[in-house]
Length: 79
Image (cartoon, rainbow, N blue to C red; front, side, top):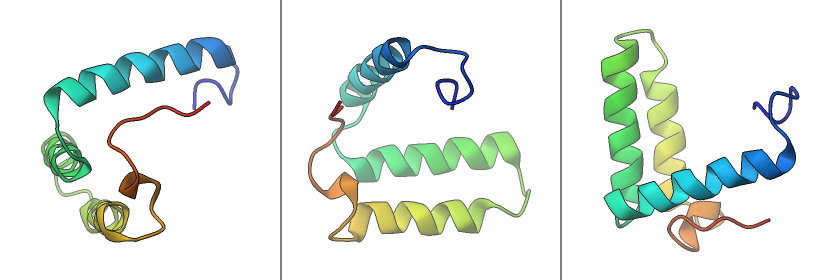
């Protein structure tokens, strides 16, 4: 991430995440919608680079596993 490699301060990173979270919560009502949109955008942008199945598996896990952080609330930022 940009914070990890020193491009952004921790505060700036959280500020960007807050802003992105607000936009996402306006556009989507559930993580399923968010994940589908992400996968579609990635497929269009990356084409058939061989990674779609991996991203699809991760998305399925995130929207269905009882221990997934996505199972609690839609778009919340915890500091």
